[in-house]
Length: 432
Image (cartoon, rainbow, N blue to C red):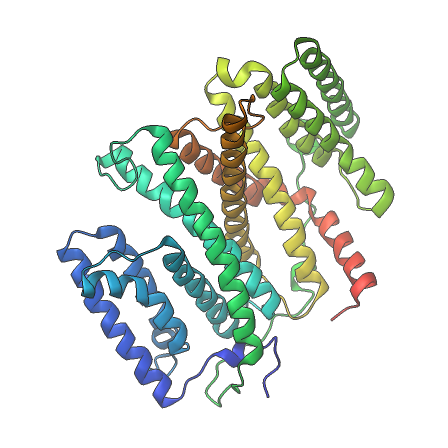
């Protein structure tokens, strides 16, 4: 029996599976033609993505029998086929995002089976949930961009900014429900499936474990800008003092959003020192400055700069997203180092970080929306507020900017943290 964590065991290259898989590809092709004729170009893009993902293994190995499980292909294909062939809009966004979750699992299985990437089933399930949320965010950003640039009406349909934003937030919530539900369903799928990898399963040799550990000395802030660690620590302490001043000012004028944001920001600035003292995690002075600057600029924004300076919100979102990306990178790389069942090459790690940040951005926007609506319902000042669909979409765009910054320049500060986390995993859970 295949091990429960063996993603490769989900791939079947038997004749019936290949036949059913290619029949579904043919049906998807008809669906794509139908969406073009009906002018449903967003569905056309989705259909093409599904077809490409399904046929890539067969094309790469020049063997039509190398097909993913037809059941997953059917789940992914269902919403588009339903809409095109039956002429009806699929009833609920949850079903559509369940298909997205199935597509994410399909991609995870193919990456594991046909590339150097290695994932155990738990890692794959987490990736399914994050990818479902990330796709919801990216899909709406792309549709909104088309509306702004080309005058389409995928998102901006003539209603008010707040009404459209509420609709998109509802879609994000549906995506979250579908992602979690899909993760639970696929967990059962992994555990109940009894399918041995066939003799035609192509598994490329796994890279040596030490390949990723060989690295050059990273270039850090002190090298790029000539700022010494002492000066970086002084800058961090100065911002902490200013946060105290902002908190006192908020208390004097009884401004609840300023008070709440200053307290949270000030608390976060002490977390690196706590992690270093209590858990022996190395905290580079530049990393501490990075985290402190992100929360400090946000606190300044809540104290009035968000209203006074329009780009301030974009700056803080990019910087905050870079901190989220850093946390995601440190965690993923620690798992990567901890267990031989997970191997993520650097190029793929960058894609994972983008997914992680997009998903975190969607979760943050849902949180903002719920806090904003609760404040309205109770007649309070919102600690976190949204300002229409344009504000939400631009926030998500700048979240991506922050993620790109981390993948290009920020990992130098995170290598030691990742390795220390991995060592703690080894001590607590044992080395797999």
